[in-house]
Amino acid sequence: MEFTAEDIRYQSAIGSDLLARVYRPKGPGPFPAVLEVHGGAWTSGDRFNNVPIAESMAADWIVVLSIDFRMPPDEKYPASVADVNLAIRWLKANAPAFGIETDEVGALGTSSGGQQLLLAVMRPFDERYAALE
Image (tube, rainbow, N blue to C red):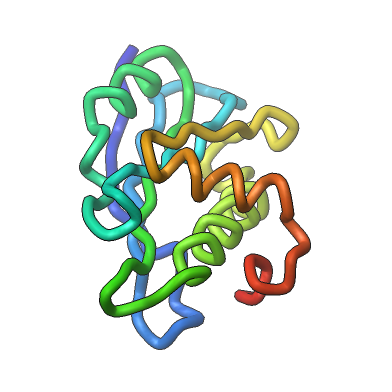
């Protein structure tokens, strides 16, 4: 299956833009989607850490949103988890634009990305994590 990959801005509420790479299958959709949160010991990495995984999923008819998020030393906890929380909401809110089936949105986190993702999904209404509009 063919797909496209493009960088987009998903966050600008913090005074600077955060980018994500969208891997989108070519076809009519709607498609399931996955938010991909990279690892890096909470302090390193970017949306390109897991390109082979994202490309493989996109080739199998899954839209993937691989995000950048704020990290130390520039930003401290819970900034990154707030970014993950926002990315989940952003992906669902923008589902029609990407041909996503809104009831079929999942997530994948590798290493510390999985830890941050779990914090965001286990406490979606925690004021620290849901602080961004």
